[in-house]
Amino acid sequence: MIIALIIIGFIFLIGIFFYNSLIGKKNQVTNAFSAIDVMLKKRFDLIPNLVEVVKQYTTYEQGTLTKIVELRSKAGSPNISNAEKADLDTQLSSSVKGLMVNIENYPDLKANTNFINLQTTWTESEEQIAAARRTYNASVTDYNNSIMMFPGSLFAGMLNFQAIAVLETAAEERKNISAKELFNN
Amino acid sequence: MSFDVANNVALQQVLATMEVERKRIAGTQTKGYIFIAAGILLCVIGFFVGFPIPGVIGGLIPLIYGGVLLFKINDSLTAYQNAYKTNVIGAALKFLDESLSINPYQGIEASEFMYTQLFTNEPDRYKTEDLVTGRADKTQFYFAEVHAEYKTVTQTKDGTRTEWHDIFKGIIFAADFNKKFNGVTIVRPKDFGAAFGAWFSKNLFSFGSNDVIQLENLDFDKTFVTYGSDQVESRYILTPAMMERILNLNHQTKYNISLSFIESRMYIAFPLNRNYFEAPVFKSLLSPETVNEDISTIKFMYDIVRELDLNTRIWGKE
Image 1 (cartoon, rainbow over the protein chains, first blue to last red):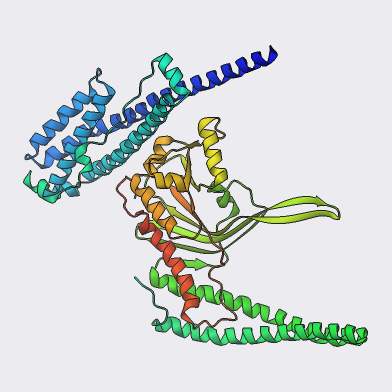
Image 2: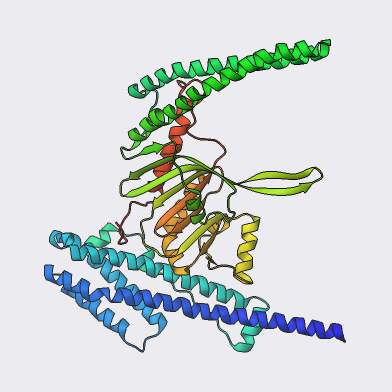
């Protein structure tokens, strides 16, 4: 009788342990996304300055600038899902990258200290967002593993925990940059 | 840039002058050792043939004379070894880069050694020497030889026995990192203990303020265990490219390296068997391999900055 009670108690404790670790991992995923969010906000805040500086030197990049501003305001709207936000950031990132390439044609702008500062902050934020995305993906993988593997899978079934998709890096980023494509644009 | 000892006229002249001194020291030392050996031999023979007292007296004279010879040459030996470090290694450093210099009497202090967080044991005996400082383009760096040991005292029948164990023996390299960060990231070789510790703190309970950072580079994760105070910041430092570069660097060394990133500085510990930058006594200075080994070590350290791409300063840190 006592042995049976001990065994039940033991199983119960293990159950609590796995349940807690599962919840911990789920919260970790939320936490990791909020880190991306913070970084994204930091980066979106750079946009108005960047646009201002570029505007002073060139009238030819209006199209790109308008697009960037549009994307930024979309990303700033309150009712937007995490996935959409990440997607907007990817689009924004590639537009700004395109803009930076074009700026090679404006030596005055390239030498402007404000612009240089913005450029370094931008690359810095790029790398920080990449780090935050990788952290998010690592937490998601950790969480997915634990809800798919036994005995975590039992709890996940009961609590209706679903696997979460990792953030993909945009297809165009994976490609090697081709000089031909750049100049044909 | 390759540094050719054999074709460097100035250095060859320095080496030729020092070679004379080396020969004198080597000669005296050989003589000293021969007298000591002869003294011991005389004592032993005295005992065997049944004249222990004349044997000891006869043996003591050459023994003392040999000792005096070694003692007297010791000052010249120290001067010669320091001249080697300053003149030969110093010249080789200047040739590689004007900013480089060596200080034989300085090193990395024990407090900084602990500050790197590369090692958990506090040293009981600590030696450091041969501090090399310099700058490779935009990146300031320094490195020094370090030998840190801890002791264990065990009770035996006849009292206590003290044993010394290495915490670390080798070169500690420090460089200004090209990104700003506030937390701590530590990369240690993955041996059994580290692997178990990492598993334990990830799955059961984590001691201290640093978490295990699971990185997506499988090779890197197999070779090292990474701890960090901030998951995002550690990944900001250890980008996919940086992980590849660290692995490359690790492939070039015999023993696995450890790294730490603290307050915008990076530390690398290279475990080594050999004592570097020591002038040879019984080997000619003029044979190229003597100096070349030291020079290739310096070159290796100098190249780390390029190898890890620390001169790319586009992340808001000059």
